[in-house]
Image 1: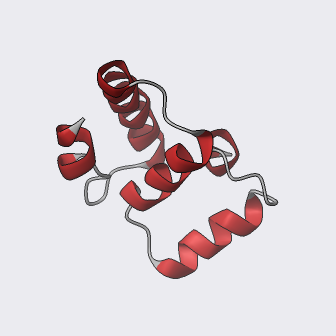
Image 2: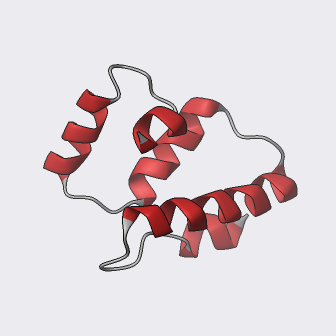
Amino acid sequence: MDDFLNNFSRQKDQEIVDYNLAWAREIRKAEKASGDLAPKWKAHLYLEKMRMPPQSKSQILTASLGDFTVEALQK
């Protein structure tokens, strides 16, 4: 879990599709070690670890239409 929280994030110039695949793999490992995370906490981590500029985060949140889940943010 520490590795996920402290070391995992989107790499510079990493495509979002590749980040999503890495996210799925790493969150599965983290939840295996710690148990399931609450959906909103998972969505928060997904967005933070994406390392997007604040304006881009605002656009992603707006596009999710108030549905603060990883699945909505990925769309």
